[in-house]
Figure 1 (spheres, rainbow over the protein chains, first blue to last red):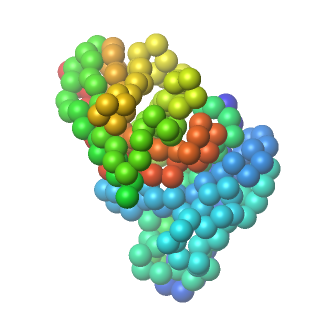
Figure 2: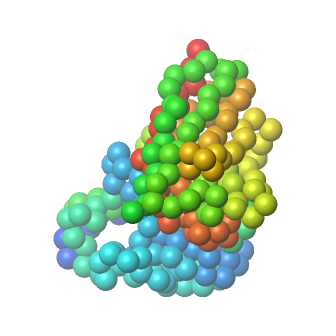
Length: 107
Length: 119
């Protein structure tokens, strides 16, 4: 199975901060990676697909980059509604595997 | 507009069975890959099963292989997860989710249904 190592597991940040979350795959997955945002009690929502493509309707402060084994999700200027848990998902090889999640909290 | 609504969750004893349903609207389940993903409250996401539109190919995570079966009903546009021989560690919120194909990422999720396996 492909292991997805996501870091950090949690972070505290202020409104307006730049935030970067990383996912590392245990083997190359091309750009077969998506990023999701989950708020309490809700289903995940896709932000980024194909590693760097912004989902329609998602604010442009979100961006994704990377290919192969190293991927990042960046929030350029954190907004109050961005405090949530973020997950990466590799869909290159079955079983599909998620990163462990990053909880973004208010400082 | 794509909409997925899960139902069928509840409290069940170990060793018993449960069938989850996912009613889809805004698209045809037989034309997409459909997944079940689960999440223990407060924990991370775990992929459970796939039903592809290509020859109805199914795939399962190792912890559920031989116990869970996915299927779909084209007439009602519903996706199912039959869960047999349930274990305590199957307790979770179960989400159904859609993808453009088996090797595309999930694009839409339902709101989830809670399964609690307890004696």
